Length: 159
Image 1 (cartoon, rainbow, N blue to C red):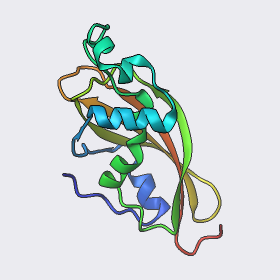
Image 2 (image 1 turned 45 degrees about the vertical axis):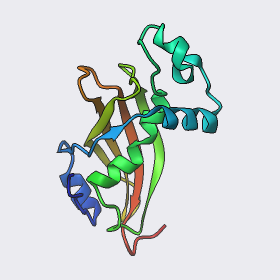
Image 3 (image 1 turned 90 degrees about the vertical axis):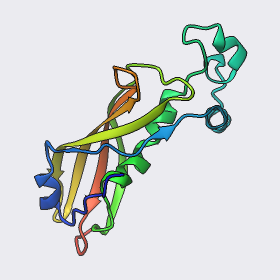
Image 4 (image 1 turned 135 degrees about the vertical axis):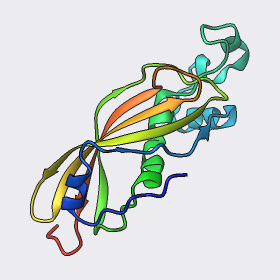
């Protein structure tokens, strides 16, 4: 497992632009987690939850929800970067999000991230864009690529 980096200033974040972080540890996709995600989101499409029907479908088994994979991003980012050096950090949203390849049940996924932009806002605050690439073991294409946008405020900065 990667030791997280510990930036404590906007300048530290700016120094990370273009640097790839990771990979994270592996996360295994199990059917019970797919079913729990389906229950939480009320997305019970058969390709995710009907194991018998999915076995005869295009992927020879169930696949995880793309949004389930995306939802691993915050926890994976904490493996790569500790945010405790800031007064606070907030998930501001996402830019472009794509799911280039399905993620089959039983697959292992991990994430690499690259800080792609740091935009200073007011004194001591910045908007950070990080490109997150989720790769599944044995699959050539990523299963998710997302532009995650966060907002960071240094200790002592005006909010």
